[in-house]
Length: 287
Image 1 (cartoon, rainbow, N blue to C red):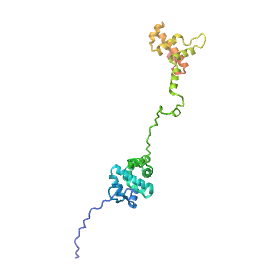
Image 2 (tube, rainbow, N blue to C red; image 1 turned 90 degrees about the horizontal axis):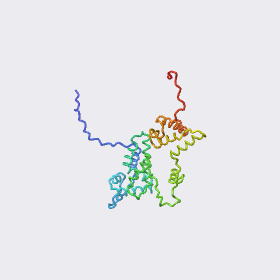
Image 3 (tube, rainbow, N blue to C red; image 1 turned 30 degrees about the vertical axis):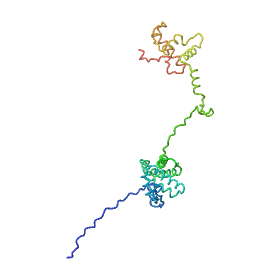
Image 4 (cartoon, rainbow, N blue to C red; image 1 turned 120 degrees about the horizontal axis):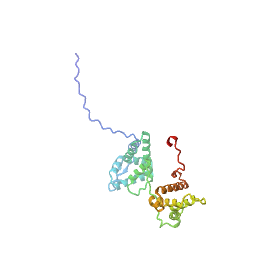
């Protein structure tokens, strides 16, 4: 019988290398292009002027900038912005590669609840707005990189900052520059309004005269006008006023009601007037 060689144990495989998942978003592809294609370097003296200048590729320079203090980070971003403004092209891509970690974090906030299409557009907008800010921003003030990121996010998210309305020192302005109302002086207009404002007592007198235009006929008698004035306008009780006018309280109530109905009609407030005719009762109700 043929003999077979004994089985050999498979060689022990070592640990597989850790594979990093590629960022396939727009910003991720921009960072990949900057990392794999660019050969630009920045001297290390930009980070530490006291050390001999050593050329730093993009990844090394990014690590140094991320760990640097605020004033050092400002100096590094001023160097990048000036290079991008002078040469554009690859330096724009280099700056986007350096800013990638923060831009990606801002993109995550911006696209958290967006569909794929709007999210992709948001990445494009964020990158473009960052480059606009890189070429426009004032580099003389501190916090260069945070202001670049804030400007990019503000425009990409359409976030609008509300500026406070301008305040004028009216005493310091010349007369020809003092803002004026189209309706004249408001304080003067208010004084005129109060001066010519008709009081409720004057309205009652005017309506009483208007109701009694027919000669020899008083639609609103003096007694009724007194009842309206003292009970409705002055707040006295009907019982007190009726006693002083030598009227019973039911009679005073009826006279006041008739006068109030007339006044309501004169004012055009017909819904406040009592009906002139009582509704006709049905035959079943008359029994």
